Length: 77
Image (tube, rainbow, N blue to C red):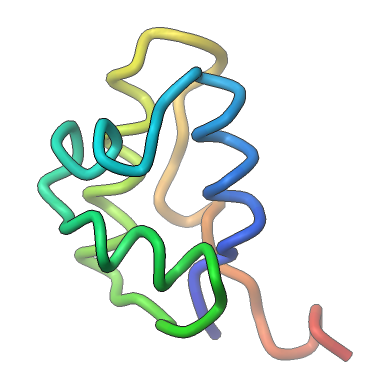
């Protein structure tokens, strides 16, 4: 299981956030956000919680739940 980088990018774009802005809002480094979006880093539950909080705090769209950010291996098949 890994954080869905395509979903993170889509949610970030929908909220008009840059990688750096999301990083500041979530407390996750910009390098980590970029690596997740590129599929180079799987992420952790804490990272998912922080990203969900940052994305929800942007004030646009529905709140984001950390559990919704995970992509399961069977989804990749």
